[in-house]
Amino acid sequence: MAGVKRQRGEIMKLPSGSLRVRVYAGVDPLTGKRHYLTDTVPAGRTAEREAEKVRTRFLNQVDEKRSPRTRATLNQLLDRWLEVVDIEPTTRMGYENKLNKHVRPVLGKLPVGRLDAETLESFYASLRRCRDWCGGKAYVKHRLEGEHTCTARCRPHVCKPLSASSVRQIHWILSGALSRAVRWRWIAVNPAGQAEPPAPPHPDPQPPNPADAARIINEAWRDPDWGALVWLAMTTGARRGELCALRWHHLDLAAGVLTLRHSSYLDEHGELREKDTKTHQQRRVALDPETIEVLRELHGRYLDRLAQLDADVDPTDYVFSPEPDNSRGYRPDTITQRYGRLATRLGISSHIHALRHYSATELINAGVDVRTVAGRLGHGGGGTTTLRVYAAWLSESDQRAAGTLAARMPPRPVVPTQRTAASSPYQRIAAELREQIAAGRLRPGDQLPAVAELAAARGVSVGTAHRAVALLTAEGMVSVVRGRRAVIAGVGNEYPAEGHGEDPT
Image 1 (cartoon, helix red, strand yellow):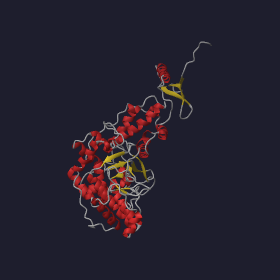
Image 2 (tube, one colour):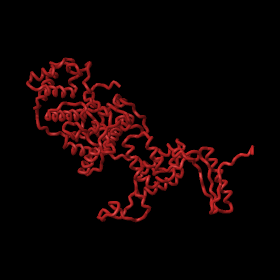
Image 3 (cartoon, rainbow, N blue to C red):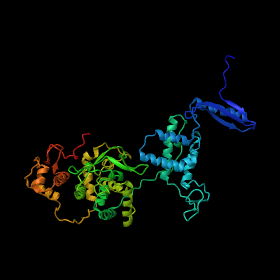
Image 4 (cartoon, rainbow, N blue to C red):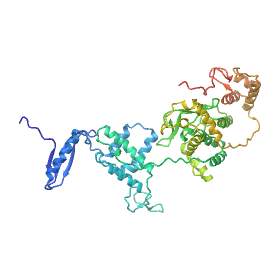
C-alpha cells in the first residue's frame, strides 16, 4: 500500500526463545558477500524491548558509517596490509617475525570488528608476563614436535616476559594495520588508538667513558684495519651498516670529507644487500686530520695487498673488507659480534651502537650545537630540525665538530712498521715524485710524465708506475681526469682528482 515505509532490519525469535537481531550493513569488501550486523538478546520479559534497542543502535551505526563493513579476521587484515604497505625489506622482516610469533597465534582468528582497547591491553599485559602465552599453566617445552626421545633440552617451561620495547613495537605495527582498516572502512574506529602500550623508558645512552674508549682503541689496533673501523665509528658516529657499505670513492681525503650513501643489510635469505641510509638521505661528514691520516694508512695497506696480488686499484672496492682485495664488504652482524668479543675481553659492557652514543655525547659535552651533531649522525628527527644533505659538512660548526672530537679521542696506537723506508718499487717512485714536488721542481699545474715514460725510465712495469700515481692521487698531491695527463694538484687547479670531486647534484 502506498505511503507505507518498509522497516529496516529484522528481529527473529529462535527456538530457545532468544531474539536474534540482524541489520544489513552493505557488501563485504573482502568477500563480496552481503554483510549483516547481528546480535542475540536472551529470552525474558524485556527481550523485545532490548532487541529493538539493539536494532536501533545497529541502524544508527550503519547510517553514520560507524559499523564494520567486513567479518574479516585480524589475520586477513594483516595479510592485506603487508601487501600494500611500503616499508624497507629489513623492516618488513621484523614486522613479519613479530606478527607470526606473537600476534597471529593469539589474536589472528579474531574478527577485526571485535578488537577493542581492552582486548589489546590484556594481550600486551600477557606478553609482559610471558612471551609464549602460557596462561600460567605448567608444561614441558620439548625440543622437537611429535614423538621423540626427550633429552636434557626438553625441560619445564619458564616464563620469560617480552620486553616493553618489543611490546611497543607490536602495538605500533597493529596500530598501522588498523589505521589502514579504518581508511578502507573495514572498521569505524582504530582500537589501537585507544589502547595504551607500555610506557617508553627514559633515554639512557651508555657510551664508553674516555678511559674505556682508550682501552677499546688500543685493543682494536692489534689489527690495524679493524682498529681503523672502530676509530671511524667513534669519530663519525656512522651506523654499522653504513661502515659496511663504505667504498673508496666515498672518501675525499684531500678535502677531508666522508660521504655516507648506502647501508648494508641481510635479506630474508641471509644474502648481503645494500639500501639507502636509514633516513633515505646521503650525508657528508667532515674528517679531522688524525682520522684522515688513519684512512691514508689504511689505503696504503690496501695498495700493498693489491701489489702482492698483482691486482688493479678499483675505486668501488670496499674500505673495510674481510677479503685481501677488498672486493666484498663485511656483514653487519660480523661487526657486531667482533666488537662484542672485544668488549668482553676487556670486561667492558658495550656494543657497536654505543660508539654512536660516544660520538654524540662527546660532541655535546664539548659544546657543539645539537643541529650539527644531528647532521653528523644522520638523525631524521628527535626534536631537532632535520638537516638537509650537505648542510652539516658545509657549516663551520661541523668543521669545529671534527676537530673537537679529534682532540677528545684517545691517542692512536703506534703500529710498528716492518719497513723503515719505502721498499716496494711503486713506493720508491712515489717518494721520488714527492721530493720533486716538495723541492719545487714540480709545481701545481705541471704535468707528470706519462705512466709509460715513468715505467721505462725506472725499469718497472706500467702497472707499478700506475700504482705510484694512484698512491699520490689518494694523498691529494696529484689530480687525474680520464683522458688527460696527470697534473700536480694545487690551489686553483682546474681538474679535481677523479672520484674525489664534488657531486654535481
